[in-house]
Length: 382
Image (cartoon, rainbow, N blue to C red):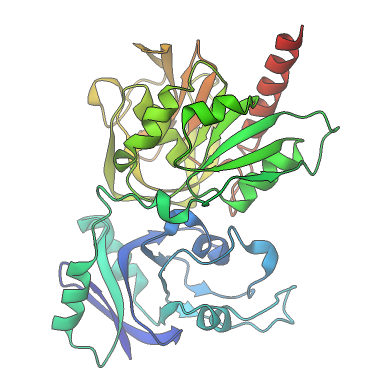
């Protein structure tokens, strides 16, 4: 027997699986029906315990091709019915629970995940832990209390590379753009999408300066996804302000939040976040609705501090970088999902166009960014 304990005292019992260890972090949930390995290896889940709403987790095992980074970043997995499918099934290379054990990741199964998720939806994401039955609750509560809250937490430094890395294109005609990536926890599938479109990538630590980026003379800058509170990353925001307007910029997820802060908007913590592969987002510039993959616990306030956008037309206002326009909204709760700087050549989306896992409705945004860089590089050469 083992149990999940939340910081408000709520307890959910289950059976241990994975590594025989305890784990503490922010307890969140994901509504996707697949992609459990991708989720645990997504750097955006650093410092978190991931609850899966889909009951059967592990049905198709694990494989190297599903890795979104070099290792596991989530601290634990909470499940209703964990499965340890053997490698012979569907190209799997190892069983899910064997993989968790080998990587030292705590798991718990036979949990009433429906009740747990309802509790988080009502009370909000909070700190908690996966604990063995022989650990008394008083000691478990002490461990939870010692865990720093997600508000104000800089986790980008923990997942960012220590040195810059160059990756050559895997597609295109050999004449693609060079993109500087501010790596705050970039997913492998994002890197794959850009390289397949002919881009040469230079991945930088999140502490890179604007001067360093500009000295390298890339064609554009990409700001990655990643974990933690964007309000704690003012050092990145300050450097972004030195780049915007001088190079084309595209940001995804945390990158969206950071660029929005760079133009003067604020961010705030959502009650339980957006994590799943079925979020409808409306492009206010075209009226098109896309089903998107999302993974974030913070969101952007609109101009004037609005938490929701009631207008179905693009909202425009002036910034230090010229006119800005809110371009996308989430149709579940009408929160901000995208921004464009009309004069500075910068844009963002809160969701994940690469969708690893998830629908591919928004992958055209990578095409748009590559086309923008190619077009501007061609114009500059003439």
